[in-house]
Length: 133
Image (cartoon, rainbow, N blue to C red; front, side):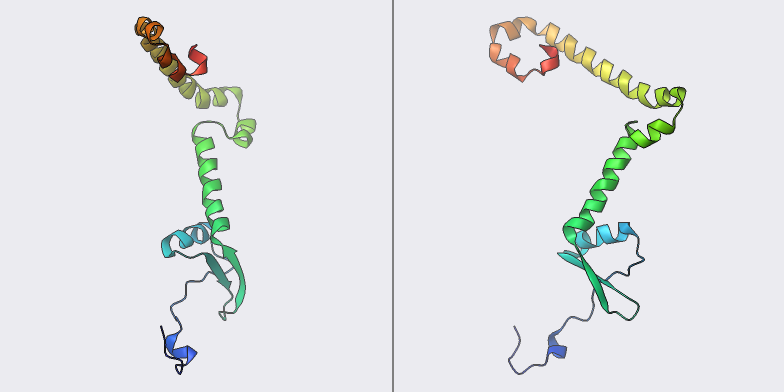
């Protein structure tokens, strides 16, 4: 709290967190989370305010990038898949398909092993995925 007779210059914050229009989108996306800002001011070379980016929009950039990276890592990036030859696409997708098949086989073996228990306690069947019923 400040006294009523204090000047604005005496109580204002001078260590401002700002970005320039040419800053990378990574920097704009990470600043709100590090500095607890609700909006990110964009200023020019003379520190004149040009605009404001809401924190939700900046964080949306991070989410979109993470989704792209995830899609690329599992071979689900549609644009990249269109540029691949069938052999390249197979090399990208086959390891994930084999992992899925092994997991499904393991689940099937566990269900087969405990089938008598599942028949006696039918409530357990409600926790099984639809693909196993």
